[in-house]
Length: 174
Image (cartoon, rainbow, N blue to C red; front, top):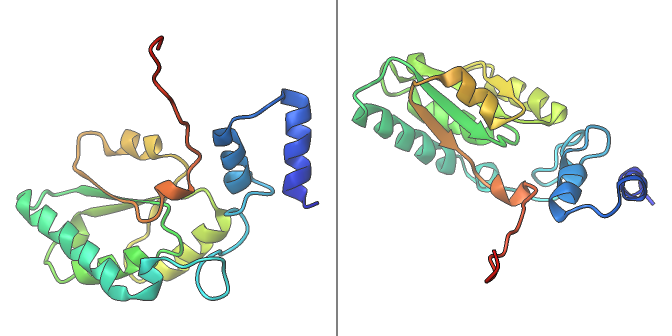
């Protein structure tokens, strides 16, 4: 039995049954035992890979899409570019590479990463040091508080499939 299993058994003994959302939150994000907290799960040495890790074109196209959005908005002076669950920072690295061809765009970008993993934050910092220094947040609401009324662009690749979810079912009585 691993440390996470022991922790979950103890939690259930103390609190009683837990929801699937609570289980997933602990399994993925527990500060001591969570899957994403201490490891790099991506690529050949990891458990899975994502599109940005396979081809730089994916991130570059995302970057060009963001550039087009910025141009269509009339080149606002400041935009908040947010990536939810940025993994290694590969998608953003590729996106920023293509965005830099548009004069003034990178100067307008304030980059935010919503990332809870200390291990992945270290990798992201290393991978993005040539572009823009991100501001890291643990929750999306922290970014929204900072952004105020300025434009926000959000990127989330293979993020929602790794979140604890709550399922609701509507019945005749509610």
